[in-house]
Image (cartoon, rainbow, N blue to C red):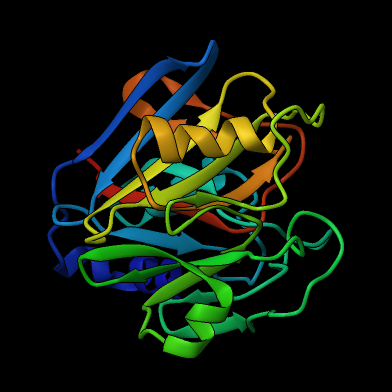
Length: 247
């Protein structure tokens, strides 16, 4: 797994780039958001789940402490997909080539099963949000991947089940990717919003044609340049983040 490889000595031999993640706060249609862009030509996104003892990291602070013990630190980070009570991922979770959970293509209960859902696929120098059935058909060679749902934006269209006037409002977070895969844009709402409103941020405000929902209510963000490091009351499952030099 990536975390184990990093903590097992990779950091001692592979120079880490300077931070190239840009985070900002914006108001869109009257609602506040924090938006973080990761340039995949300069940085690498990593997925993390368990530590060396196979215990979920749970919190950004625990992952950061483990990385610091290996000579690095956690930069930008966000929760990265839905999980069960024991913190195991609900859908596909591929970490540094090791599949921890297989892909789920069938509809089901909850937001995850509100098809179409999708996969965030991480490859060398790029990241892509891909609708699940297309992902299965194309079988891209991802280094790491996490499945979540629903899709927020699919080829430029909002998810067909979203209702503009829905009263289901939560703090929500998700990710969208540029068509060339070079920029991954992570967004968290800083006030409760519905799916339709949240999807429009990616499609209309950011101009992204594909975006994926990560979660709601438990949504958390670490953005050191903004002085933000969300803790929350319960531990997380999958985490996505950028590893930076310790100094």
